[in-house]
Length: 322
Image (cartoon, rainbow, N blue to C red; front, top):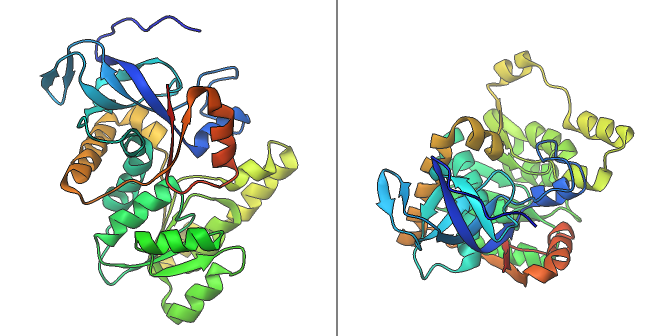
């Protein structure tokens, strides 16, 4: 147990209603996430709760007791958190807990990837790896607004049906199909315009090979690492699976590789996080996005919640309520 955080300039204290589970939490628990503090530690990036003091958000004073969603640099699995005022957004009372939690990390990540790091056009063909996951679902919903053709991978018939309902035009069962062959059959030498990859390793290198001229791949995770562990041989295998790329290779084919780590964005460019958080809350209010809640657990069921996410059983956001 720790003391309730004291007021601090430029920060907002939040009494927490609930917090979300992200795959990075699983990696941190296993010692696979290099940005995490040494264990034992309190992980978690996102919380929903009420401000404990009168606070300043976006240049406006909001009273104590205002319901907010907050992004924090770990410590989210707490009854009280202290968050940078630029990483907190007021939310409507009627916004469900799980949907609010999805906005902080998953939808901010997806928005930054699909709205700020690349331009998406109606004629584009776009692949989303792990399309049934939290960020995958967010990406599909954001891409659907663009009118592009969406390809999505998932590992079960249930998840394939789910991603189709979300807006995927070409669902691919990665356990039974090679997505590179599906893309080749559909597009020939044209290739994909954009790939969003959260898996890393071979998935990333295969995605890059599936790009056409002018294509871009956006990598924002390495979920493949969880299965391999920290052993040196597994780390080397993961690195090798990513592949070796030359700048000349990118230049000649007019391709681009883009990396996204929202934790580092929040650390070094907090104004970007503030902008994306406000944008996704506004999109929820306008009805343009609708986060899917994959499950809700009680705080004493945290182990079950982690197993649910790690076992890739979830579709959408997994929330934990105090």
